[in-house]
Image 1 (cartoon, rainbow, N blue to C red):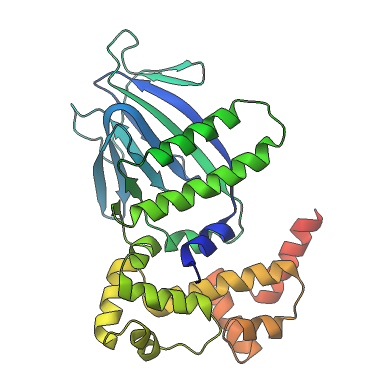
Image 2: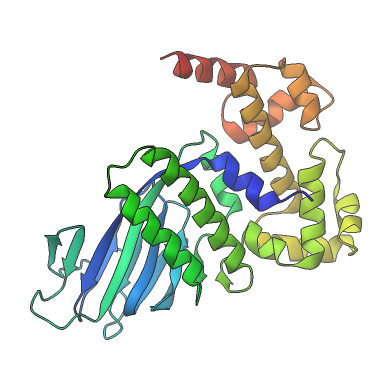
Length: 309
């Protein structure tokens, strides 16, 4: 059976994580505004708040011991103790932060420790990351999953040790971590995205059909039939659950496949167009340019030059 989530995560090429231990004493708050790297956090002891900034609103969740949170997309966020309001977007925070071996000490260095967390960043090596990340939830919050805590601890050990094949081990552990996090979040807290869509039995049928046969001449009526729903009900439920329309999802997935094939330089553009559901090179070129920003030919040339460099 086709696994859309595994396909998307594999194309993202996660690797090279960075992690550190954070020990904090209430009251405290830390805001992160640097963009470009996915962030994850596992609470080992105590509790805290995580506030994720979004367009026009912010989502705040309480993280308890054993909880895991992941923010796949580049966005600002804040963590804070439970005894203070979460810092708003743009609000300055002045909690003292001091380095310590393997991490940081937040808040009063002489105060009682109220939370211990392992936090980290990872990088997505795929040139398609900007295209694929919107298919993922804006945030994931998983509770009571010791498997995730174990994986993150293993990652932390690898980043601080000089062992043979460390980079390979980290890349594999991170890919397992991401898949496990998304898989676990299907029945817990996650914002709209592919994970929530796959947790809906009817929408999952349509999603798997799109991934199994990306070149098929899908339209709204056919996808609705795959989900055994009316067109209007399917469109509304898919858009609300996944966060984008069914046809936008299909086009995004097709272009991700096309980008991968163009980088491999093994097939002519006409055959790539056919493999992702376009009967003409011109129609494929228009769709690719609209979504990716450059024509297929220029994309392939740029990738070839980057590889050579």
